[in-house]
Image 1 (cartoon, helix red, strand yellow):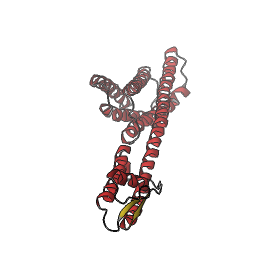
Image 2: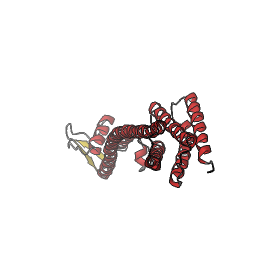
Image 3: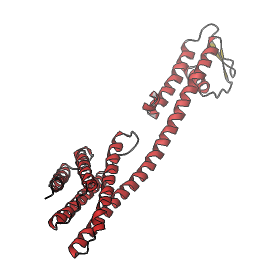
Image 4: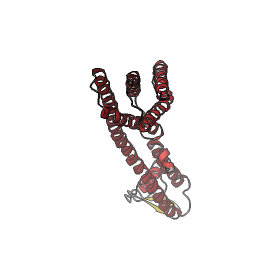
Length: 271
């Protein structure tokens, strides 16, 4: 970013006002010989400090009413002030535009963030519904081999959701104009992750107990990736602002147990 981007609008405005005041003081206190300001109305060359600052202001803003005219060295000084005034005025205008852009970007990002959170939670809910459907079919004795084979597609969607969540939380911390995810939505997301992992654990536990063959390389790989991604996410949970320590502790301990149980089943050797 440009250095002036780090300055607030007030800082730039004060610098601009300070420059105008300084030039006004120069016009007033350094009047001598051929360098002076001439006021046509009243035919005066000895002007008050107010008149000098007034001339400095209309010069810096390129208003130029013509009621006060510089002579001698003050002509060059007035030209320098015009250039400085235009540059500072451009900075002020740029800052105003930048502030407006930041407001718009924040509003757009907030809307986009809300939509992303909603989609992620919907995706996790759909995952649990699909897994629950398989569990019901197993319990009812109507499970088909194709459903077991296609189980990896649902786990792939879980892994994708976890990756999106990880990106969402890391980006919110490094982007200078964006807002952090609020603690309520953050807690809901982590609860949804935990519930999804619990549902996955329930499914593979039933499959093991029912002696149903479900282990495929792609399925095992996706489960491992999902548990690893979940662990990484929950390691960052403490960085979420305004999320209570008790909530962090409860969520992390809960998911740790679930991840450990899933990994135990996944690592079991075939008989």
